[in-house]
Length: 296
Image (cartoon, rainbow, N blue to C red; front, side, top):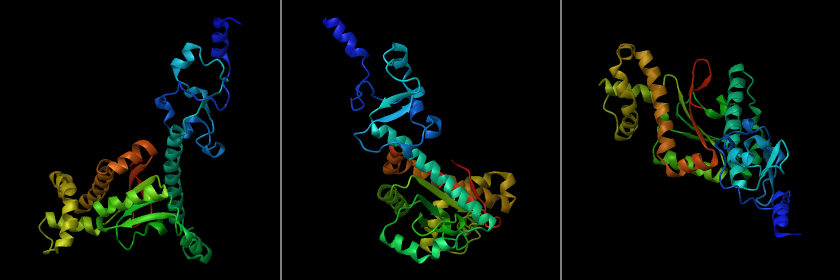
């Protein structure tokens, strides 16, 4: 066989499943998306770094299709050997699925269908004592009326909950979130505020000079919230309407905390960029029981 024929033969042969894929250097933008767009379920695919992943051919780089070098692929699939890229999709799926689990749990709570057994079952307690696998991280307020496990209808070991007045972001809260994301693989963080928040109300009173002399520690909380609330006083409709002012202040504080977490921690930024961590804001209504996710 001539050298030209050998080259032609080697260039058109279908590679073995274990062949490396040197041509694959970076994924197309559409590839790094939730699996709903890719059209496959991660549960059906291997996780070993030495195994091959089959991905819908619609995500094959257009340059590869145009060059004709992809004719050994089937009409529907192409082969990827880079697990790290595949894990990106799986992690984003984890965040999406965690959010849906919280939505479903809150709906059960609103409907009065909570499973109190999940919090009191002795067997569940024994399992959780051995190890925890929280699927979501909740940064919520300390308010006694807003227990995350109850309003999301989840049991022991399901949620990693951090509670502090006003759901403020400080170093201890950031460190706790980093720890949970790193140690337990949770890929969803929810900053959970609630209606009629006392910490927000205290901040409003402080800005109106109606708050009695607070302790230094209480003042620390107020000072963390004040920069978010103060601009709202410039809006006439809010300044003259205390209820609406408090409502908007609660939501503004949650959004500010979300932004602080997204941009104020190199560790969390890395989890967001490389491992699909999602940080969202939400507000719990004390009256209706509904959790409104307004940043997804």
